[in-house]
Amino acid sequence: MSLMVLGVDDRSAPTSVRENLAFPGECRDRALRALKSSFPDVEFVLLSTCNRVEVYVARAPSPPEIVELVSFVAQFHRMPEETVAEHFVVHKEEAAIGHLFRVAVGLESLVQDEDQIRGEVRDAYKAATGQGVVGPILNMTFHRALLAAKRARDETGLGRGSLSVAGIAVDLERARAIVEREAAGCWAAVRHRQAASVLLRQLGDRTEATVRRELDRLFSAQRDLTEPQRAAIAQAMSRFLNQLLRHPRSALPTATDAGGSADSHPVLDAARRVFGLADGRPANHVNPRRAGDRRLAESLV
Image (cartoon, rainbow, N blue to C red; front, side):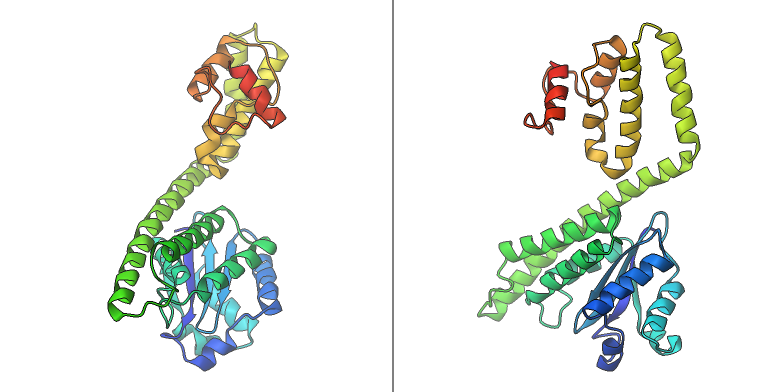
């Protein structure tokens, strides 16, 4: 498990409990800093509105225990843990993503076509980003949730005040379909990222030694490689491993950008073919206005 949300809302807790657990203004920033200090390798976003207080948590392979987070929230607000624990609702993994998307679109609000919640979700995400507690999982998840919310508003009549009950029902059904589809895509992306993360963790400290060993074998077999060519190959391997986790879609196209103009060699040509860069055309992501990309484009033709 890598993603979880726990919190209280108007259905699980009375107004008095929600008010005591809220994170308004500077209080949210202090809480985010405290979370970062207590759980330094975990991603967090705190969403606090008049109807809900939620903590979004992400860490591969798993976030902290629920009891740890409930205890943190209770202690932060100086409330007895036993009086608030029963009100918390937890969503995990795919259900957590679906919940966030429904919240961002407004489907979990008391008034389901309100537009205010999207701004509140955006503000919570920006606040967490500003405190440095957002990483790759929550960054992607919240970014996609906000895009889904915008799409639901653009493609339906939500927030524009439909005059008929039937019209509102149709808009809500269309919004739910958008949420379901976009949340499923986001969950698939999170799972792919988690799989890459697990793979790299399994390699652990062996990764660098393994790459070094294989490069030594390659260089021993290809003694005609020049030092710039060897450096280019080693850098390609390093870039590929680093980008595989952080930017998997662009890892292959950018891995062989050595940032220089190494002379052609069969090994480099083979690597470029593997990475899809040896077809005589620059990769789609290459921007010829950037000097580094221009050198890469020139080296591929």
